[in-house]
Length: 183
Image (tube, rainbow, N blue to C red; front, top):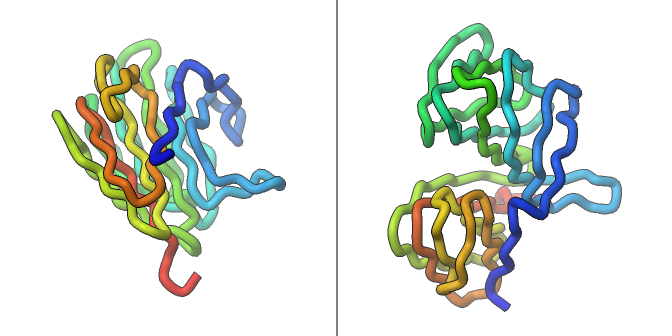
């Protein structure tokens, strides 16, 4: 098998580490003690919320909408429209407030001592070639997308492994999470 589909709808919401909101963990590499070096999740946003702190973690957030998201990182405010991204450190003081009563964001987090992260938007047909030492994950941002001609829904993802290229079709985000050199 060269890929595994993870269905967003199958992931139950869980409280944020700080209890301020909820998230659905789509995939991680957690061990028995629930320690992970990478994690991909979708958070539900409502009202003003402070983000949980994650020491030693690099974070990549893509705002999914609807509306806009006012996000403040270390007292610097920025407004994101759907599909816009921001990177910040897990140690940063971060808060957000969506313009709509509820919204969502996609979070990709890596422990910087162990992993590096490359995030690339995709559209249309893309051929994804996994590499050794890399967790290769494609998240569908299109309500009607495909992985190897298998229909997937918005926020479903494919964990791509092995050495065989995989074809995806639709708007999405490709995450390549590499083992850091020297680890």
